[in-house]
Amino acid sequence: MLITVERILTHWEQESESTQKILDALTDESLKQEVSPKDRTLGRIAWHVVTSLGEMIGRTGLKFEAIAEEAQVPQVAREMAEAYRTSSAAIVAAIRAQWTDATLNEEVDMYGEMWTIANTLDIVIKHQTHHRGQMTVLMRQAGLTVPGVYGPSRDDWATYGEQPPEL
Ligand code: NI
Image (cartoon, rainbow, N blue to C red; front, side, top):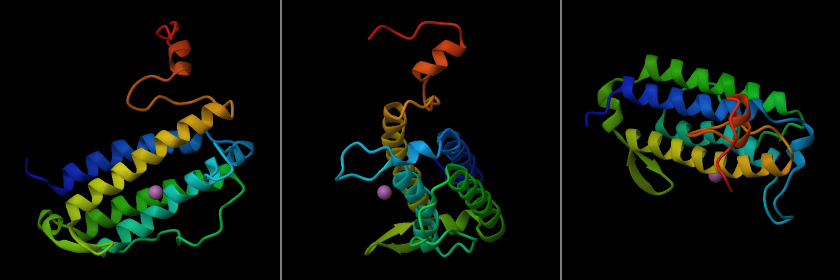
């Protein structure tokens, strides 16, 4: 299938909306939630998702205002959610201004391998999806309301006025 900037942006917008829903549901208290002392806390993963936009998409040469990878992890959930919202909007605007469909076939050095820009965007989206999955489990452990992503969460069933499927 022909990959175009419009298709990439549609995909990005769908996926970033899902990520935004997750980040918007975090509370300051929940940021400390961990699955084990050896693993990243919910806040640390959330901030990694935010900073990975600049770290990964920045490698394509796209110029946009991003949060530095080494930026300190905020203690306030809203700051993370707003940083993601701003970065994602900056990415969409920068792609519209700086890329054409031909740009998507250009290859860039990603961690020592040459990837097309289209593939890089796809990997960024998969990376985000991977961490969203981790976050929803930590959110459940922290007692938060979990938004549905590709399908309804347990909490969504209640808002439909229905029982969730049997365990
Ligand atoms: Ni990661």
